[in-house]
Image 1 (cartoon, rainbow, N blue to C red):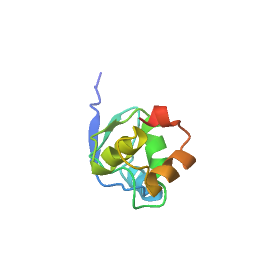
Image 2: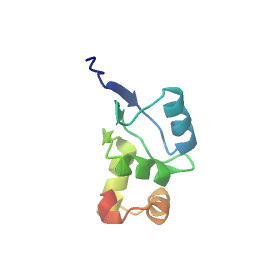
Image 3: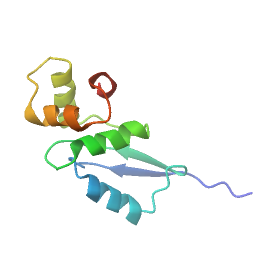
Image 4: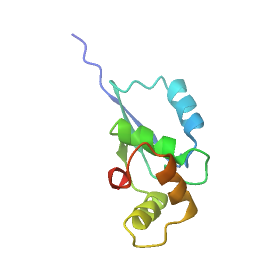
Length: 102
């Protein structure tokens, strides 16, 4: 019996580009049952769909190395700094609560 080893797929600087992320995963023939997807930080901000990207990683319990943008969001949600516009948008558009995102 052949054992199929999981691929490790590392992706960095997604920056809220959900459509592009999905296209890349399709091009890689990503299989959530066989592959291990790991974000190297900066899932959010800049692009048009930060909440969708964040929701995708939360929903599928994927691994994330916290980048500076995730750190800013965490600090804003835990009231360590001002709730900036991108953080407000993420909270409004995400399927997850503030506490679930934290």
